[in-house]
Amino acid sequence: MMSPLHAVIVACPAQGHVNPLMNLAELLAMRGFFITFVTTEWMDQRLLKAASKDAAARDREIQGRGFKFRFLAIPDGLPPEHGRTSEIGELLLALQSLGPALESVLSVADESVPPITCIITDSYLSCTAEVAKNLGVPRVVFWTTCTAYAIILKNAHFLLSQGHIPVKEEDLKSKDKLITCLPGKIPPIRPTDIVSFFREKHVSEVIYSASLYESRIQNIADYVLVNTFEELEGGIDAQIGLSVNGCPSLAIGPVFLPNFLQGRNSVYSMWEEDKTCFQWLDGQAQGSVLYVSFGSMAIKSEKQLHELALGLEACGYPFLWVLRSDIADGKSLDLPEGFKDRTKDRALIVSWTNQLKVLSHLSIGGFLTHSGWNSTLEAISMGIPMIGWPYCGDQFLNCRFVKDVWNVGFDFKGVDVDEFKVVTQEIVESTIRSIMEGSSRVKLRENVVRLKEAAHKAVTEGGTSYSNLNTFAEDMQKIAKSRV
Image 1 (cartoon, one colour):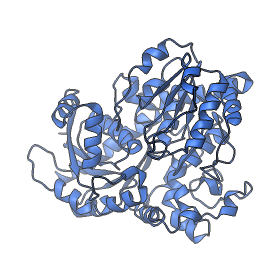
Image 2 (spheres, rainbow, N blue to C red):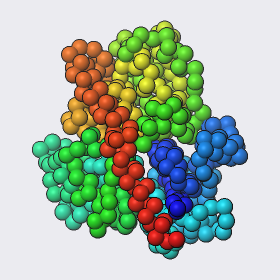
Image 3 (tube, rainbow, N blue to C red):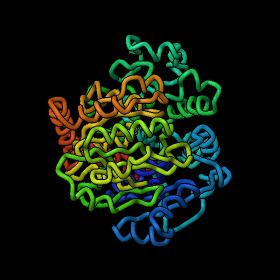
């Protein structure tokens, strides 16, 4: 008999972490796992409010798909008015103390729930290490990033010992300085590729010390999973770069793609989505629209947003712009006078939408993005070239790999050194033209379509990611069987 499998999945309370972990949860549920999905009360309420559902309706919906699923939420200890994702250092610090609350909620007796097989933890949740140890179950570290970035972060203390962290201002400006001492055969990295929280200017901030602590605990793992696919980062050896004491390290992504290809809407949003944009997109010519979105956390100055708006206006292309209400650091934003009137016949501005559905629309020809890993994977999987405009964390590395390693996009010069550098409307306009027209566009499209096909192949039966996830399920089955 097959032993019952029960994966506890614990997600960092941020949009870019909940989505991939929920998609992974569904993929495992389809392979027979009972899933306990845990996040914070704050995030749980945000997701329910955005979806206009209560917890009971959500449970009925996901169980209606035939999945064995339950959701648990624990308090994060922060006051209601705290900014959470706008104060990442303080949030990380709070999350590091959640171990007792997590262990307590998992220890409540429930005969309808199988014994826990493993804890699959977001790589940024060090609190799960002690919980997994106390419960006597494997700790599976899931990286919501690319393999290269995961290797950098996991080896932060080594980089510290070698003098590469904290990253000095003069090193950021040196394009000739390359770091080649990391394991896993990752391409030589530049100082600007290292986690932005490890830059010298952040040394006195909570985010610096909190990230170093997370790096240390990321080296406590019994299994490692990465949201990437082998064909994208084929030259990198994840087993050498990420494995802890020889444990398996497997690429299983893009985890959203199997659900998408099978017609399941597996997007979990912190904001109410605008659905009117799809009718507007239906009226645009194929490949003519530039999609503009900077994710859930990036902040831009009002001056920069004005320059961007004027560049979008000057380029002449139709554009769909996701403009969050808090993108100007929570301040009310006034776009250039007359901008909306002058562009109303070829532009649409929304506060939030289903990005995956947008990127898969035939009218989309390019993506101006903050270069978050989810956005990067989604664009590659839909065959859309990118213009990268990174803001923090791993976005600088993702942006450079898009431009220099995978050759599927462009960036803006200098923003990797200074994320607050103002990019002028002239540069915005010329860069958009480069990605939307001419010979450069043809080459970018060829490259990204090739990667799109590789991504689709990886997640379908017989593909590398599909097989790797099956291997993980089989390994967990052996663990469960050994306990019977």
